[in-house]
Length: 297
Image 1 (cartoon, rainbow, N blue to C red):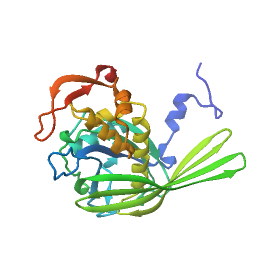
Image 2 (image 1 turned 180 degrees about the vertical axis):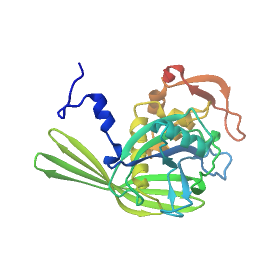
Image 3 (image 1 turned 180 degrees about the horizontal axis):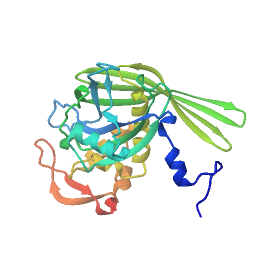
């Protein structure tokens, strides 16, 4: 016997009468925070080049935010999931596939897109810069890698009834041959005895479209958090690398220097030494490592 709802309808009858158009529905987009690591220009060939964390941005070729820089992304198509849309956007913008891809957060603030109600399901991807072939999408007039700098400006804490509010302001700077973009992003953490809530606010913004400064900040903090307890940094490495190069990648992500001995103990189980050595002129040969099979598992 079919169950009846409060209006006396069976499920089949309910579905026949249901009209999705009776309810306002948002558009759903995916925005991609694609990170890579590159070598900084170095005049002294005897000195190992410094590493730089970079994020891929596209210059918008249409309204809104015409000429502004934005994260690559687009609307989810009716025949795909958000994961499939993210993988498609990654493939279209960089030419790479089968790389690290992680869902970050769904950004749904009212008015985040001036066109209409748009919710953004954001993703973070980590790729080796040697794999990339940049190309701008149909709605973009250019694509470029921007060097990332994300540093704490100020921090405060206020006690409230039953808990506390912690406020942290960060400066986000993105630079490339196309110029410098800057934003100040505020992260507020409200903690009580029973819950913790975190919110992000863009205090100032110069050059970035939509709320993408907030999405980039969220991605940087996720990357910094996970690099301390997972092997996530290895997704930014080539197949073979030195331990010094790997330490440089950790340091540029965390924006701080690490003790060599402690670092090597930390990553000992994540890498496996090979019989190969570097052959760079001007440098003492260094043993090359690869990601360990245990890390893959």
